[in-house]
Amino acid sequence: MKKFKYVYGPVPSWRLGSSLGIDPLSQKIKVCTFNCIYCQLGKKVLYTDERKVYVETEKVIEEIKRVPEIEIDYITFSGMGEPTLAKNLLEIVRVIRKIRNEKIAILTNSSLINSDDVKKELSEFDLVVAKLDAVDQETFLKINRPMDGVEIRKIIEGVISFKKNYKGKLALQIMFTEENKNHAKEIAKVAAKIHPDEVQINTPLRPSKAKPLDKEELSEISKYFDGLNYMTVYETERKKVVPISEKETMERRGKIL
Image 1 (tube, helix red, strand yellow):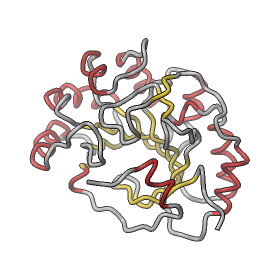
Image 2 (cartoon, rainbow, N blue to C red):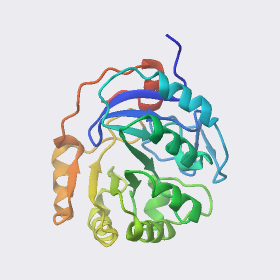
Image 3 (cartoon, rainbow, N blue to C red):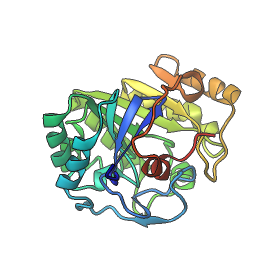
């Protein structure tokens, strides 16, 4: 069978069920505005906030058409960096909608969400999962290690603005580690202001520099999110799935600890 380069999975996502991944960047090292301490993609990063076409739309669609008949809950844009850096993101989504029936999701760090073009493109997804690991600049720099000039205050403002007009489902993913666990109360307050449809409380369970919090710690943290529709990584079952390409999936996902 011809190899897949840009499509991977499906993966057993605790948030999305059976998730077929699309990597619109597909570079050898991650291309991102962040270099999070818990990132499973390695230490090397090409910092950029310039949007461009990394993979031609036709190449992605050719692979999508070759996906065998398997159970998929979501087609999810994620992979080797920040997917909104792909300038042809919307074009890919619109073509997929013509040939597939599954819901389409994106995992984003929201660093480009103040761009009108990016807001418009994100609005066409059924589910937007936005990262929110910090609400103050000091913690943001420590855990997400963004490129110069990125401010968490502006990201939060952008997510709040986006949610007001978004017709789909907005989820906040919060990755808790030793670096931000003591800021859970403040993060929960900001999360409430955003009014997400769902809050995903996570801790790094894939190999990385950051150590995961245990189940008890995460359970205590989740209490700050009472009143919000939240789920935690330790309390959600994963579906059993078989990826169509083991190599491409492992490069982007890594093993679950």
